[in-house]
Image 1: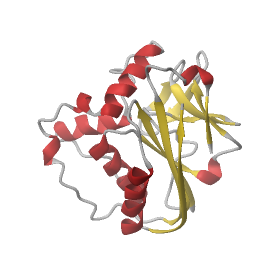
Image 2: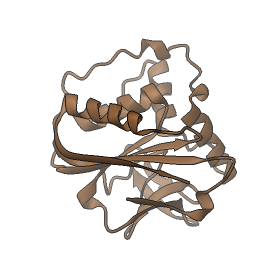
Image 3: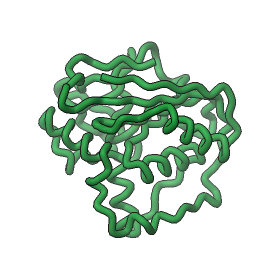
Length: 209
């Protein structure tokens, strides 16, 4: 499902990617509420995936306070009493999983992805339009790429492959640097999805460096 570039295979920063794909009948974000009060005084840097993601970014000379991991960014919003963006119910689920685990989660419309997917490094002066972020400079940033170019990262999904209410097949990628993800973790995410939206043909797997 996903190949990992040799340049990202760093012994001291083991990388784990969990993925889950399936058919979905999309639902809206209405009435979605979760209690995140336990995060108020938590040091989010203690989450293994956030610690590992920051270390991975620094390895490639990317400032993790400028290119924040999406999980870190959402936790910071919650701690500052700012609302999360409401897009659709599948986004809500992935955001929730990301918040409670500290693992950045990418969510993509699978039919908008062209050809094989690789987790690699952005090229010099390469950019893409991030969801809610505008143009994102991804030079030397770990990113997912297909035949058309970069479309996602632990920092932000791209507009090109973003899910909408019309999405029928989705792909979600859980980024876990220095945070081993197991099948039981993906089973838990699978149950979260099944409890909130109508889905079928769910499959998942793990890729490691």
